[in-house]
Image (cartoon, rainbow, N blue to C red):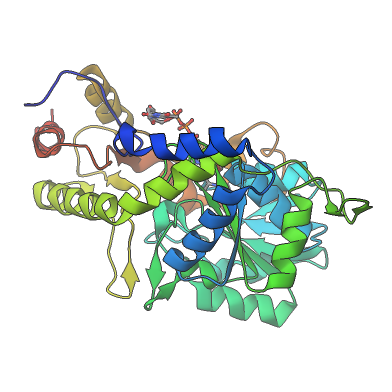
Length: 371
Ligand code: T4K
């Protein structure tokens, strides 16, 4: 039976409440609430193992993970990034005092177009910060080639890329660092949360210092750190969530397939492309509303909302259109035609494990109705 409750773009995956009680009892018993407690340590190890990465440092949220990743690599000057992302990506640069340089995206991946990166490099460029938008892999090989040729660091904003594999290996292993978000709206959530994935123990120790005010030991401060620690409640919830994550991703895969089946014959609606070399997490289901469709993206969005369905226009407006960015030369619309077109056409449909088949059929039939 379907209900008349609003259908949001996402709903957090919540394991049965009673399964959380034993974790709470342990926290109450130990009185250890934060600062690298036992659940925090256990989650770091279990997540690194699950994701197939060498080292992972937990964070209070994905934005602080981004801000700290930039500090870790001692970035300066200009950083090349995408305008087609959540605003936190570029905000992490401004918080650090760096200049974002926007480069256009590729029309099929929605990620930074590697062919356009070199033209944006100046003597002040020190890093590239691409985003695996919707969990679709960036062209990691081409980006690394450019970074190596110009001596640039690469920090992937992998907020959407939990558990994504590329050529059988974790996508998070690419670049110098990758950052993740475990916000309530993500595939894997700890209410709020995030992580930095790094290749070696020394870097992890430095990241751990930076997320704890820069304290290296009780009396030594090694950097202008911040308080970005994940607490024990969040970590415990992450451990519980991890037990259910395969099931949750399996359900997302089914929903993705059901949408494709229902929408494949609707003229003017294009579904996200899939590639055999990638194991996806089905974090989002972005469709593009093309000119052959009789309604504009905003008209379709409004129509769905009137019927209690709340898709989202991720990522409209482009980051480059917000007041603190629009004055940058790289923010000019003429520099970002594909990003602009995509931001005007995209609509992310509801996708989350508890979404029922009837909901998917209903959403697809409203779209197929074309009126
Ligand atoms: N980089 C990228 C590429 C990102 O996408 C993000 C975050 C970050 C970095 C930064 O990571 P964090 O610092 O957030 O860890 C949401 C999220 O707040 C944000 O985490 C996410 N990206 C972004 C794409 O989406 P909003 O403003 O769209 O969320 P909101 O509150 O409108 O929620 C969307 C829908 O989800 C609601 O309509 C209903 C449902 N919902 C939401 C929450 C919070 C629930 O059912 N329960 C909930 O608790 O930003």
